Amino acid sequence: MVDNKQIVISPSILSADFTRLGEELQAVQAAGADWIHVDVMDGHFVPNITIGPMIVEAVKRACDLPLDVHLMISDPDRYLEAFHAAGADILTVHPEATYHLHRTLTRIRELGMKSGAALNPSTGPEAVEHVMAELDVVMVMMVNPGFGGQSFIPTMLPKIRRLRDMIDRSTYKVLIEVDGGVSPANARDLVEHGADVFVAGSAVFGHPPYDKVIAELRDGKQR
Image (cartoon, rainbow, N blue to C red; front, side):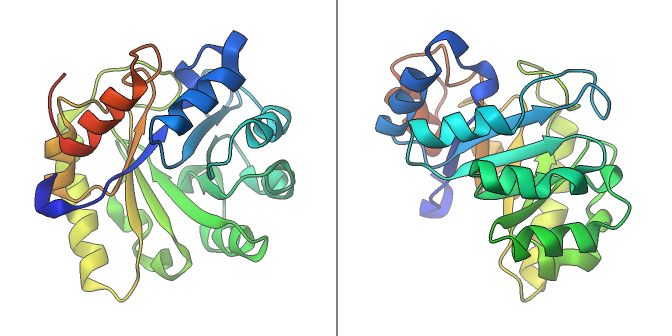
């Protein structure tokens, strides 16, 4: 991996076999995953509907990894406590979905979770520049949010670089997470531009052995 950087791998259950969800979670945990990514969609902020706190609670019971919960929902402030109670360890919201991002991020941390902000393809790094002190993770969406299995948008790479430079110039330790179309084929480019965390759905689930693909993501090698 570039500069021996240890990449965090967060497989997204959006691409898992939900008829065998417990087994799938155990399999990616045994294969070396670091976090489990949970995509929550409301059919309003994004055009798809997925899951809520009840499934997050079930995922928490089924594995021992930190739960990386991504709220693609309108007015996420109404649900912060519910997802905390369900077992979220990292809770990420979109700046466009909340009126007062600083307040939302502060509340996430007050509840004992790590806080994240997700940037849509059309949203620039400046959206989080003045709330860095309240952030643990910035997620760069490499696709338009709402559906799994979409094609990676390569023009998002410079945004990762801008964020990396912004963070490195600051006194804050904020991870850059990338979500959408991540695969071993583009892993090296993502790391070279400054990514720390890979969300990978279809690149992992459905491509056994999971330990092989997770290792390839970390190493930046093509399948």
